[in-house]
Image (cartoon, rainbow, N blue to C red; front, top):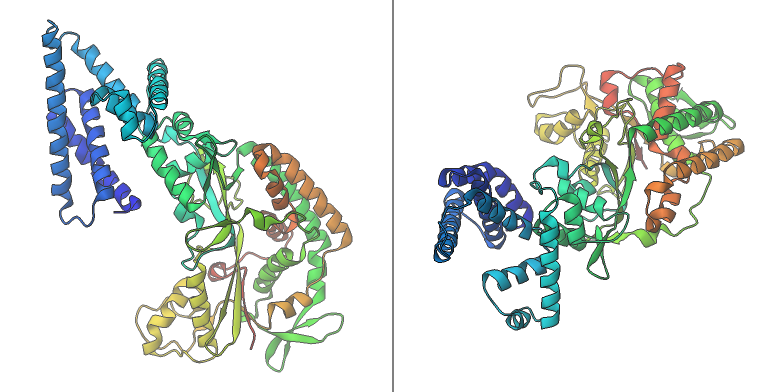
Length: 567
């Protein structure tokens, strides 16, 4: 059974296992110990098991066996006290707490030290026998025993450890998890790999410098056995690199976020967004002419009036058109610095076939903990990003689509494979290969759900023809290259301001990044004028100054989205 499935089963049965333990013993501390032992054995058994037909019976059988061993150990312990002339229940409370604490602290030892302690103290093996069993030397075994004893002594002098399920142990939450590079054939994104809170906190703990699994476990107050399992997964997936001396260093690019810095960023972005609106947006609006010709909307350059291609604009709404034109042009044209560092050396080859850099924003602010929150407390989107989907139809016609996700839209991200299919279906609808007939209902339904198609009546609930259905996004009958040729280049004075912005961004946050990520961070601050967050500020400024008008409800589904069709 794979680890993710086992984790779900453990979570589902946690309360039942604890209830079983409470029903068997009267002491709460012992019940917690018994429940911990059962969870460990169940988890271990699940990882080794195949298909289980009766999960309730399977877990009950393991729980009963663990309880039987628990009782036998307690009887042996009491008998030892009797043999020494003591009463079996003298100082029972103190003894129970000590035994319970000892069992818990052993769980915080490394995998090797834990095994050696059990073999030496519980199975009564000699050092040389342990060395032979573990393919080691007696000297190394003695050293590990010495280290284990010292760690147990130190642990008894510290405050108690908490449960792995206590959120206080994992205070960091990742948001805006994404990648730079390419995904594998299955399009598995970063939020799939890094979905668990524990995984995120392990990566954060080993980010600034390399640490051992024991050091990470101590920092998180979590048993090493749980940390080691996650580290194996992260190493295999390329998110952690193994270093000398059994240390681990995170191989992910992590942004720090906090309210103080967010306020500074807001001030910086607000200043430079105003400059873009003053120096570039007017050029954009002047350079692009949009007019009707032979019943079609056509683009032409204002200076030459030469047509470069036709465009479909829903309801001929120029305001809706300019929302997307401004956002796209700022992304493509506001570049002024070239990366001097080869960024490909940071790419990680994933097991799923992808080659990319994993990126995430880390925060311990309770307001930013949910990865589903798209806005901060000031209304600025944390998840501002672009996705380009490219596809070829069966007739070899190239189609591509661009989307910018921000707080202004009402859509969620979709994987490239899914969006490719959606845009290809839309293309077939536009060209008449899919018609508004009942037999096409299942093919067109996703387009209505996403808002790519709309009808004058409420959302259709039955397979009937929709003769008045219309496309609800910008469709450009030209290539992206043709469209880029009519967009104005960045002015020289704005390039200078852009470089100033890059330096401000770098100086503000460079202290958050470890030495091995400094040059990569410098790259991420280049061309900051085209960043997603700054474009949100640009759109906000244009709204405040009346250059753009608020969007209608149905327009929020496809705003900042364009589809390019070669023919």
